[in-house]
Image 1: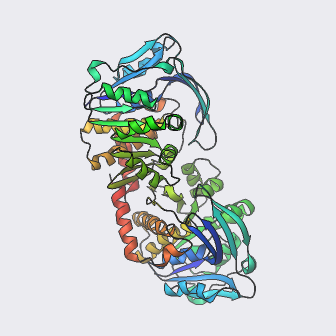
Image 2 (image 1 turned 120 degrees about the vertical axis):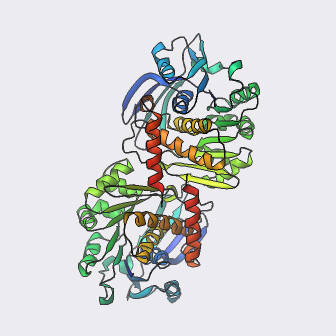
Image 3 (image 1 turned 90 degrees about the horizontal axis):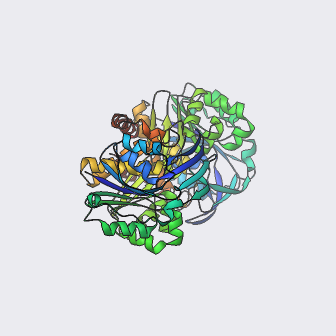
Length: 299
Length: 299
């Protein structure tokens, strides 16, 4: 089944343990779609400036990502510049330049409005709501958010979450949004806001999926060389939703399996600088790693 | 099969999310033996002062822990005073008073020298070596250590590790001792020092067991109310070694199952202040939680 993904496409400059990239393809919807397209067809809605290099879009084409919704506007592309030190779980943002992303108001092409699986990346919650208004009865909506929006527009964030099937956040965001220092209790609070599931991504410590009547806990695949954690969470979400769309099954048991697919894809994402960990990846690689993760967690 | 446990018995004063305890029974060998005795007979070798309250020892008797090796000397019992703030994964030590523990030189009673399972708590590595000298061909030796000894007596620590079947450390200690910021790589380095297994305990993030030819990763049981994390790691080690001693099976597959038992016991330990989380615990409670952890991690 088809996936619609809305979020940011960026040009990233990153200093990571594995080296440095300068103004290379990044952004939440980029990592998400490169991951999800291993499983199912993905259509992207995002905006870039007229400085966006043609070669940067090649990676989308190579993966068969539908870019008809990738709007090109006059101005500069969103840029993010960050680095990692010591604890690679925390990115230090050096600069953010919104460019054309600042007043992006996503228009969902008619052909995408029936896409059953939807991923709303961590953009302005009002933008996320505006996207939902344009859709016709999606089967499964995944919503991401981040500290900035939780701080500045909590009410809007809560309104989007209410309409989500799954809220995907990292552990710090879950604690902040749930107002609890204990992650499990924070997730339980987030469920009260209305989503059917909360998926907390904990980086090297794995992930937790919670519904009102069950919890699923999964460690991360043990990675020895983290080259660059940028995009790991979005890659996780891409593997998760991609597998759900491919299997056309949103039962609780299949959601757990989808979390494991998310973990498998994310483990590849962090092994390469920028998007390179996802670039050459095949579905077969992912299946092998999923199998290994299954073997490593069985007792 | 019998377990011999050597380590510290202390009087702890703790400020934790669940409340405050003052001069109550604590110490590494206390938590270890209360956990391990759910599975197999445990004999303790430790030292207390003549101020050690009779009631404090009652908990050992209630669990059938053999305290013939609990030496009582003139002087004050080891005292630890600590608290937790925000991130309950990190204890803030306010004071440590070694008392009679300062010149403890453990003599292993003749009756214990053939005990097949041995746990050496995080005491002076020279003391750990002196214990090993007194034993006759133990089947399985678990060694713990801590940052203080790694800093001050690294060579001695390495000498003990070489002779261990499993080194049980927390993630920070593993990184420090292995000299790597990546935990998986740090564990691989620790294996090079000679132990057959390295078990890294990651608190709320679970645990990793590594041998030269396999890795086992396990998330923690999701606990909603962490009353007091004191002793969680020792309780984990107690559940782990206790199950191995009970099942008389140190195959890799059974070690993985033992890690899960460690996680189950530790999850109870943190739910109560001081040792209270372990006090009323039954083997049946642990089995139920193990079952739930198994269900929660299957995909």
